[in-house]
Image 1 (spheres, rainbow, N blue to C red):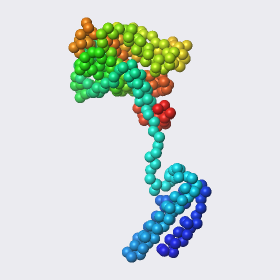
Image 2: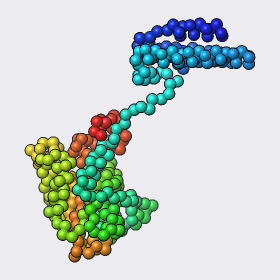
Image 3: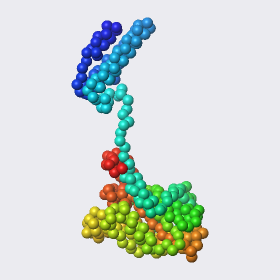
Image 4: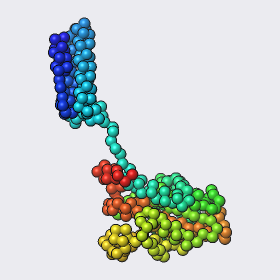
Length: 340
């Protein structure tokens, strides 16, 4: 064993390399999983106790010589920053120095929150498992009201009073119950609806809802707030239009479109050649909702809006299949490294 080790020590001392590949081949030859060092350590089991002790010292000396030579060669070839791990050598430690990326929904959600924060909106959150009062009744959905059929609900343990929230409007109620106007807040979060999963729909998605309650709040305030948001989110030339709609918790209610950011409002396949794309619902808070939260509608008024984060993300990144947001496919997610 001593003669073998001495010969290898001489070979190691004389070895020269000019490239990282040559250094890696040298390392694998000696200390790779199938290299000379593991083979020599295996032979130690055939030696007696005294011989194993001496052989162990010699092999440790050889191993240290290999590692020292590798460090010298790496410094000489200026390759110390190169990762020498290869796929066929499992003896090397794992390399965890991978650059991550943010999820596209997180990127867009953060930008939306930042825009509203600059307008003075605070951020509030609430539970995803909600009771009927906060999810429906306080929002002007009385029992048996046909508006409840607008949303297919996941009930918990078949209890009609407990469900996964269908919108973050439930957090608006909690905020108004525990605050005194003026109230200016947004409510980001995940919501759930019992829908068939497809390229255009999912059983869960993300919303950011907003609420402003104070004295003399008008529809004009709502319009200006949403116009500013749209131009900050997309570009300074973005136009908006408001169309009459119906929501149980706002009156009057509207749906808001923006001028198509792909064709500039000229008309294309994405906007169905109308020049407009719907992005949110909004309206003035119904007086009954204020009463349910012990806020006097004779003194205070307010507006509310709800925006789908997936909808905005699709407009920015042109993601055609909603399922891609929840599949955790790295090929999809790695496209957004430059976005954050």
